Image (cartoon, rainbow, N blue to C red; front, side, top):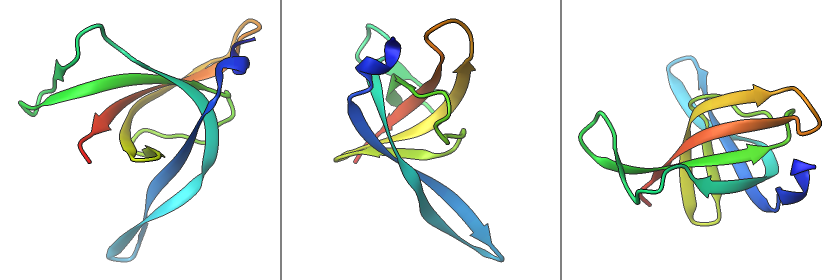
Length: 102
C-alpha cells in the first residue's frame, strides 16, 4: 500500500478570519511523502519569479485545502491544489505545493 511511504511529518496552518483581522491557526499534523514535481530545479511562475514545485502524497482523509501553508522543519510550502484519488487499493490525497523562500 502507498501509505508505507508516508514517513515525513508536516504541520498544516490555515488563515482564519475574525472580523477585520486574521490569524494563522494550526489545523494539525500529518505524515506524507514529498517529491519535487519536475526534473528542472526551478519553474517560473506567472509572478516572474522562480519557484520549486513539489507533490506530497498523504492519507485521503487529511484536512488540507488550497491556500493552506504546510511546514516541515525549516521548509515552508503553499498549497496550490489538493486532489483526492479515491479509487483502487491506493486511495490517497495528492497535494501540489510551491516551496517558499525562508
